Length: 185
Length: 77
Image 1 (cartoon, chains in turn brown, red):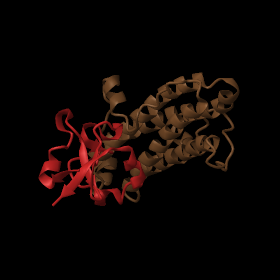
Image 2: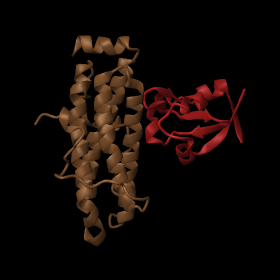
Image 3: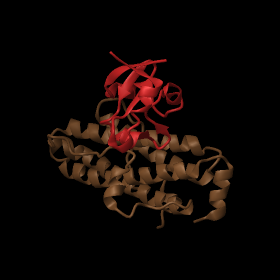
């Protein structure tokens, strides 16, 4: 644990235990989403599905990166991950992004992806709101993740006809242009 | 429609796997089946069994998300 770092956050008025629970819940959401997105990506096939597969893969890898980036901050602040993987799954901040009943329904599959990203956008906005100006390191991390979650949302909403995302895809799969600074090379 | 006093509503805070109800703008919502309300807590900081009208003003979502939950009653003073 980074004792002084935690003290600084507490002195700034943040309830660190609540923040840690939020960080663990969001880390759980990232890792479980990585798992569920693996199944969704596998099922993105055919003329419609193949066109979405690459962005689903980018979102999948970047969600795993978010998990990797969150874990050190959890331990720095004196928290820890649950020892039981089932417990970890069940504390996820977002519902499981399960394969739709008809896995050939690409639109239904896109809606699952979009709902998951929108849940993440709300979650990291919440963490940014409670850490802004108080816990600079967690804020910086949550903001970096938020940037990527918003881009994921925009990609999937574009395919559902909600308008252009306004940006290109990644240069390399799962590039994490915002979160990569928190990851070990 | 069923009515809930503040005290009655507090009995539905999701403790021990029980029902999860909360009030918002004159309606009582049942969030028992919502993943986001497991155990009667939402985003760690919000507890069921009470009126959350003021709390939603600071939430990173609007009241549109509440339309996913069944309305089961009205709070009364």
